[in-house]
Image (cartoon, rainbow, N blue to C red; front, side, top):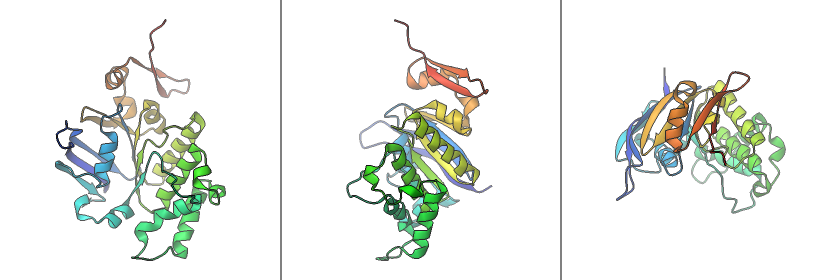
Length: 261
């Protein structure tokens, strides 16, 4: 089996600071979903930045499609792995279609503009997510859920088979969260390898993949979400009582247990 993304023994700390990553290891194959959970400030985004080559590791190795990340140039890495941020600052009044077209930049030659093939890939990505109607609209005028779908479409247009998503449901209402999660599940069925961070353990249960927990620089897991995420571990992860319950359809869900007045 060819591993799409592999991290072995990652260690990282900012100068003079405590380790944010301490011997972190995991792997991701085509069709896998890995949901990374952890409290604020625990290093989830830092881990993503290390995987993307934006931070220099003190130790460990990242391999992308069986190749060392350090041996890949930025453009070559971007053709293999795409990043979906929590949000994108709308400094200029770009059309949504132009934002998606930016995903084709790793495929352009020096000083070259987008080709007809790049524009077809852009339109295909918009259609696959059912948001072709958003193409002519200004990105900054879209709702939070619409903007997030456009950023996912940009990653698809990039042509990468590894998707790294930083809290893709952050700030979205329940309906838009479900829409994003359904897209992630479908992409995994199509063979994409997906790593995402989340503050909500329910996302790991709903996606049906694996989960891992990151706290104080140490990772626990990955393992199937149903096997790893129990009330005791989640309570210690978030420093608050958590109950894991079974819904009517048999799927698990978790809720914080608040004290009565």
